[in-house]
Length: 549
Image (cartoon, rainbow, N blue to C red):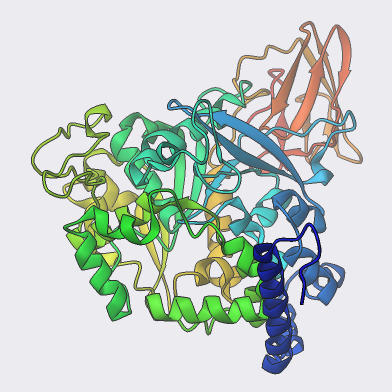
């Protein structure tokens, strides 16, 4: 049959191939016949949210909207949240896009977003992106949404090279030098530069600290960052680790075990298989071509071959929603770095040559490690001084919790007190994000810890910095009892009028904005203040031991 003019044989072949794959995918999707309704009911039966919220997160329209979303902004918009993009320039010239998740309910009347010193920074794992954390099949399985609803400022980071961070000041994405990075660069540049950017976003707060929540390699990156940048410890309020991978056990399939052994002595072997640029560059293409059900089946089988996972704790609905957005580009070198760590059985920097053990970044580190004939380990225990809450599953071969604990507390008595390990029975690697019981087993515990830490940081007096002088305060309770003598009110106060002589904006505990000016001033947002014994003493013209709700 003659080929129409203007269409090459190669183009025709590609189009026919794509058509065949689409027909193949549709056929197998119908053949497989997964019982989605059963899984949806399973998800919704334990959901503590309202019936309307549950429906929005379990019907087919929601599922297909998530699957067909092109980016994180579209994903979060489906659930009613806003994403703000911020671009960070790292010290070595990469442009990282990080995302700030905002709850529209917390916007002020003037359209600005309320600032708070309750700041949480999420970071993803290997070959994923910030989307990983907002793919829950229900709202209760989406920790960033839960925290945003509680008034936390939520940030989601991205590594260089993934779908959101594919630009450099000088290098093109097609240049192999762009992809010349591993866990070393993630830890020495990306994590510290992101934390610095987030801290600088809050000039109203003195010495702001961040709660860091990492998944898998996101945990490894902070461990390595704290080793290479010890001063970073002072910026972390709490480190929450979900499936913290530091020294994984060997891979499950014999073929992959062979690859690990081979790469331990020869970097060129893996490069000969995958090149020196991006790993799995066409994964998003195949997720579209195959469709969610067939793609989910292939991913499940691959994870079973690699890691021995059976995915029994993750519902079919969750897989169909999560898997299409789960993977993103990274460098072949970053994968090679993990093979080196598995082969060496220690958490170490990248071995550039294998023969001489040269580590490119070891001389840049703040730590005491220097180049030698052996590749430098990440000296975690030497520098750690951060409270930690680590969740791990007993069926996760990527987490060797005993080795992890030893690396953290080795000769470090401080960390023996600050480290808390929580075992999740029957959990595999992904279950700490998407498991059927992740809300009860993981997220509730995280929220309780964060709320406990927040209550321990309430300031005395008005203003975050404790530097505000107030000329006089008059209180207008709704229906509270008051005595003129000692000015003590027995019920929480809802309306406040302050006479001040300064002109500036202040925040009470990061939540409720006060505009202070000549003459009378009113709180722009409703606030409730209460003393520990349910009384507020204003005899000295200041509020004592208050809480803001």
